[in-house]
Image (tube, rainbow, N blue to C red; front, side, top):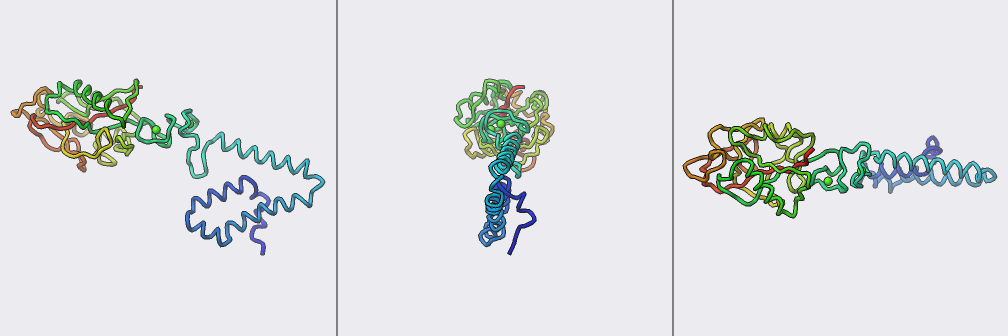
Length: 290
Ligand SMILES: [Ca+2]
Ligand SMILES: [Ca+2]
């Protein structure tokens, strides 16, 4: 019984083993079963033993010169190839998380965590969008003071570290100023404090198309209720009227537009107007300045 005569000369050594390992890991349980019963393991084992067997005894007089040279050069080229590219056949980036920006990486923040400003596979920069857990009535002191409120709340979180180079903005509109006018354009993802992707892109966020509902606060804890917002499609003001007098009043005689935490569709940011004496949360974004 000869299972692998045609490919055995080339299918040897590091490349052969690597390919087998990748093949096995890619194929999962079924492959292991086959392996045990002989298909993969037969060719692999036979291949490696035929290498040592045939090149050893048969060419013993020339092995020291040609055999070793061949083996050495094959091994070297395989190693240098994988080190240069840093990618496995399955596309996993082996160099992600080493803190060095390698070819093919958009960013590398020295880890493979997703709850920060560089994605776990180093393929995209990110901003963190979070619900701020302390709550306030509509007297936020204006949009920019709401930014400060966001920064203070997130600054006290152990979950999110705000870099020196970061900005913090409230997802909030006073009828004139809004994310559309002041949130810088960005190529990357928006993730929550747990690293769950909330919006795949800046365009998706402004288009209010969330890939997952935003439900956690700056500590990564799930919360519910409503948030001050008045932001609508395009990141534009949802209304020119309901913003608690540019977020300066907590009076029950005024109203501000709110979003509903965890809601599907547009309601996460534009759900209903509430009295300004309501005690609600904020939505906040942390991003790195460019
Ligand atoms: Ca790297
Ligand atoms: Ca990261």
